[in-house]
Image 1 (cartoon, rainbow, N blue to C red):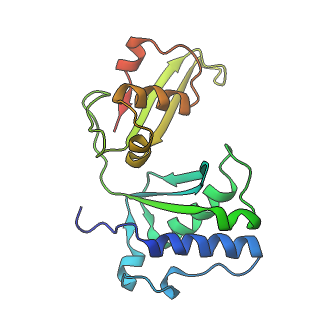
Image 2 (image 1 turned 90 degrees about the vertical axis):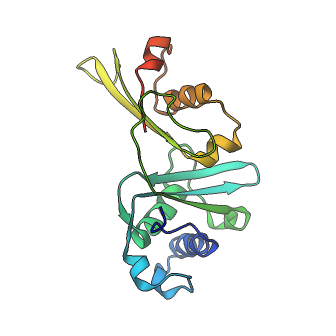
Image 3 (image 1 turned 180 degrees about the vertical axis):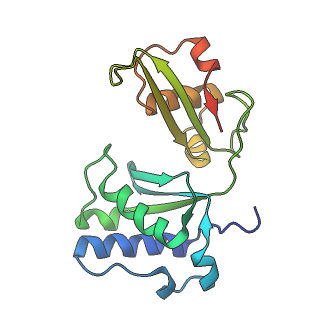
Amino acid sequence: REDAPTATEELCSFCFKVLLAKLRGTPLPSLSSQRVCWDAQDLQKQVPGLFVSWHTPHGLRGCMGTLQPIELQRGLSDYALTSALYDLRFSPITLKEVKTLTCRVSILHSFEPCSDPLDWKLGSHGVTMTFTAAFCSFCPCSTCRYTATLLPEVILEEGMSQEAVLEKLVRKAGYRKQCSPKMMRSLESS
């Protein structure tokens, strides 16, 4: 979409400033006080979704975001910290390791339901997958709803096929049982 903001180096720099302020115990910065290439109205706009990810030279160090509309400044601040400090796959990022990190901001723009689980294009689309499975040990009603998302750049970096993306999403969602062909065809994706 033409009216959707795009991720810039300034936004990644802002995420670093937010993380450093939190780790040093100083007040969090405001995006409007940064030298960004957007006007104040853009900073107040809601984006359809965004993710902030942290990377070391060895790989992913944290990634979290939202698929819900969120004001850009709030989303960047919240997810810069959430992905750095509360991604349960990793220990919290420390001040000592910040100098080894890179940051990526992904601003999402349009969500479309897929007519079938493979109705999306590699390299252009990220994928959110949802399904319900029977006999989940976490749910006493014997069914459990699972959901997971992969961003388009992650799919490209890992060189996955569409089928591999769906299998990874099923595992990322926390489903540990055998994935039957029937179950794979029943996945809802967007």
